[in-house]
Length: 436
Image (cartoon, rainbow, N blue to C red):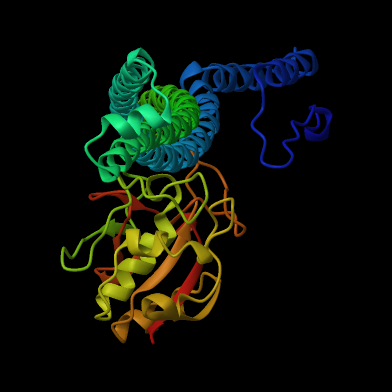
């Protein structure tokens, strides 16, 4: 049978074949090769290899885990923003409650002052009442004196003027007697008028004090109502504060739960992508003085929902080379330069902010790499990891630093761990780095 009679399996866009497509493919092959024993044996071997569940399960799980990882990071970012806002709300509520406390204290002072004024006014009113009662007694006494004088005068036997003059020892005695009676009447009437005037004045003052007391009572009632209103506002603020604190506790619980879940997801991803030996042409040889790892670093890449632990191999490589050239900087330092990252976590912009520049970049050229290494210039290269797939524009999955060469083997520092190795055919591109 001719080769072109056999069906072809087309894989586009880097997609992995499904079990259904592979099954159809093999069925077609069996249909075309019933009489070709060698081809049947080959197809059987391929089928047995392809339908091993491990690789397909790992590939599907990795994709799912990466999606879940991104979702959890978005949730963590959203919770972080919500927590930040709630903390601002709590600060504002505490300030409002403190302000209300001050207002309530001030109003209470006014209430106490009004109560004190009312008490003083009551004392003045009571004093005026006592004075009025005293004046009424004095008035009654003077009235009785006047009545008694009038009674004595009228009860004295009536004499004619001639008789009074004849009976008196002298004319001056007559005059003195008349003046005395007139003076006595005048004094009594004057006293009565004075007492009556004083009583009237006291009554007026008492009435004024009563009016003042009524005004003070109204002011006090208004202040008490104001205080009650402020206390109601304070209670509402306290309730809102308690609810906000409960919300923060809930959000913090969700945050802790999400972080625990993402740690678990990261462990699963590390287990899936943790294959360390992909070849033998590029091997690990770390220099602790300028080696950094991205593993376990959960600093966000700028304002994105992604972390150094997930996608920080490039900035970790930049940090290593920058530190090598004497400008000690960590992956965390670079990750916090938010202006260098897109919302998707991709690095962009000028690397001079952390002490190095990309002199050139492009497809891998091992001759250029060797020349750089001979001049003691580390080279950042991108590599392809089959279990991760192509996630960068050059078709790569990961970045490492090539630092030297020994016995035809390239020596590297790998951001995702020690003791790893790769083949040259996994390398996709290079970045030539120079210090600023």
